[in-house]
Length: 228
Length: 228
Image (cartoon, rainbow over all chains, first blue to last red; front, side, top):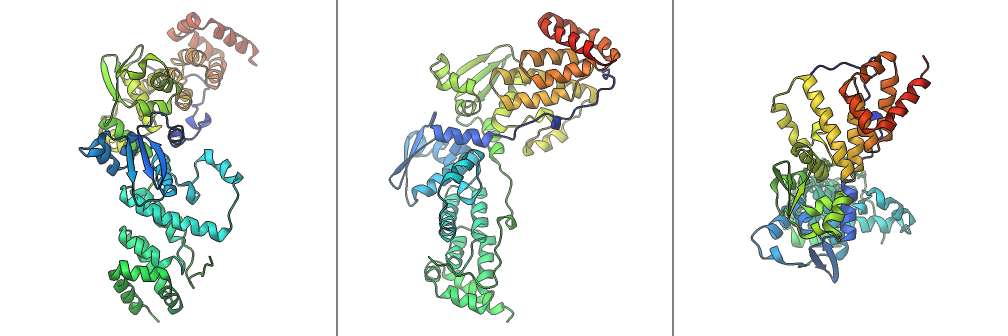
């Protein structure tokens, strides 16, 4: 086949046609919200959430084994989730369907307006609430094999390390195998004597001692190796 | 709750933690390929394709009505698609699950390697094949209400307007309501007398005359209004 070019017609690139961005995540957010075709209900801390086994399985190997493997949950339409708060499970579902975590400012477009019309809580409270959500969500992400969500939570927690959070975050990083976050906590805690003393006086440190004694040894070694 | 900042610890931003890009589209591509939990089979020009009603419905209002509305297809596990080539339906499915069209160079990461190991056809042939695919896929996108895919196809066709394609693409743009693409075709065809003569001599123009006589009137008006 021979092509004859049209005279004087410049090639028009794809970019010249207005193309809206991918809306895959928005359409799955809509599916979650509408509950159309939902085939499973989760019961979490007294609240129920309708969802789709297929979407959960596509995103999590744990749900894949649970719903499409040989386990008992295969045909069940109701699943009880223990040791998790409803708000955390809600955020987990949102991430599974959209790959974003609105709680961390990773907002899907459709929700942006809603956020701005809500009352904005006091800054410190909001920050603390985000840290607590990130801690719980990291644990949930680890439980369901959602590695990208784990990294997002670790990033959020890295940004929120202070006297009140350092020891708790360190325990969490150790428990859920987040080496980068763990190193960052240790580094922050031992940086100065004042920081170390302040952290050792927290409730979080008592919890760290009780739950992760080996991490305290790491902390001790790092503090001794410090140059001052 | 009062926060004490850790001395000398700079706030670490999320960006410092390595975060892989969203993999939503790759995981749905994997779901399509594995056929796990597939609940519908499409028969298209002698080939069969397993898919998931839920994903199709989330992405297309036409499939939503077909599978979750009150129509007869609700419980059917097999759907025959008429007037479509298997390669076109395959590309349509790929777009529904991933929001990309590999045929146009919009490649999902996992497939990039496969493309480079394939034999690369002669440039002109490849270009013609892409144009034909874009034409058929635009019609399919219109049929299933996939507006973003329609725009992607229109962009691809805009870049491939030449003597051989101009009239056929114009007919297609008219038939499937793509005003930008239609205007671009008209503009290209009437730009010079030589271009107009060349297009009028093609088979595509005969088809245009037969199928969209009103567009020929537009073309005539535009040519008369041309400054030369």
